[in-house]
Image (cartoon, rainbow, N blue to C red; front, side, top):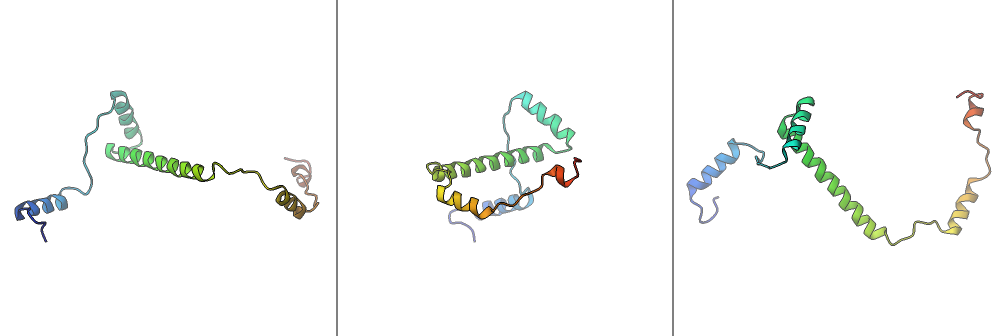
Length: 113
């Protein structure tokens, strides 16, 4: 079903273009020459196409920004809370450990490391 007001020929052309041309977006960007040259050397050294290199770089950047956003949200929620352990709970945890002696690494190995 074609959208109202769009001629049938334009819809056919748009469908044919989208199906036969590419499933990826082509784009043009401007970057400083030294950065471009370094990226070219890197892509050749690692046998990556330019498209693959830039795609991976953008994906890594977006992932790092997403992680930062999560950290910021967690800081907003927990930033005002203290991280200290309640004194009563601390004593209870300590009492539950007992007084068991553990041999150190040198004793276990007969003095060898």
